[in-house]
Length: 75
Image 1: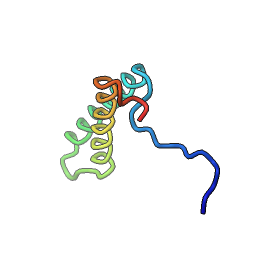
Image 2: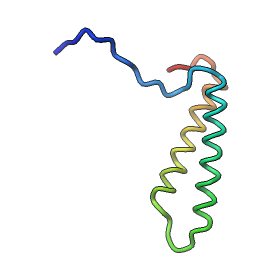
Image 3: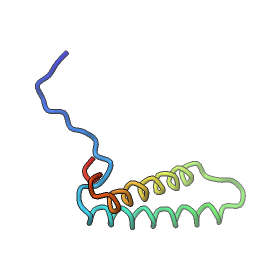
């Protein structure tokens, strides 16, 4: 089963430093919001808030890697 269409690769690290910085700021804002939400809930820990905290941490790590190591951008 072969097709001649070009395959698009998933790119995890943003291509430009501006996008890396923007993603870093957005990830930090999401993380702060998630931590605040988790600290105000005393009865239980909402699963979506925990997932958002983990996802924002990963977003921060990927965007920081793009800013620190320029060779990783667009990969």
